[in-house]
Amino acid sequence: MLEISGIDVFRGETQVLWDVSLQVHLGERVAILGSNGAGKSSLLAAITGTLPPRRGTVAFKGESLAGMKSHQITQLGVAMVPEGRRVYRDMTVAENLEMGAYPRRGRPELQRTMGHVLQIFPVLAKRKDQVAGTLSGGEQQMLALGRALMARPALLMLDEPSIGLAPLVVEEIFDVIVRLRKDGTTILLVEQNARAALSISDRGYVMETGRIMLEGTARELSANHDVRRSYLGREYRRIDE
Image (tube, rainbow, N blue to C red; front, side, top):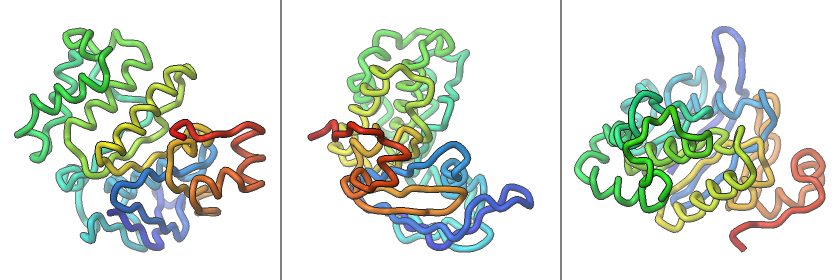
């Protein structure tokens, strides 16, 4: 579904990604792990067209994304939940969700999709008419995720969905991600919380200083000595086992 081949990416004149390659197959959950500043968000920016690669290629369903604007890539079926949630704070929950359905693929099924999203997130159904800026951080993250789902994406990308959230809320968010894969959504998950990310992923990549340093199945990475020492600690288990 997504194939990235040898991309170099710059912010201004500063190079932030070096020869990065990865693949995401239909129906997979793939985690991109790494500490702050590893290049994870720059990778997402390269995919969404906000930071076009100077070298290498990004293809979605076999179609090159070179030269495409972000809104064109969204119309192809790529949606992203940004870091920091970025909900429309002065709009209601329902209005935020409706904004997510602006791509052509989301409009015809708007009401049905909204009903599905509100079923996934019952707390949003209770707060449907509430202004988004008054929601808790966890509820805003659910709203940001629900807004992305309104576009009926083929590929859903999440940038640090656990950041700033209480552990119980993180578990709830990741339970939803497990459910989405069962619904057929392909997921690319960018996370500092390697423990949570590997617990729900099929495969993963580890980034350091703008490069892919390791790749493998979630089980292989969770058993890797360097990954365990740097990211996981002593105890680890998959939450969907």
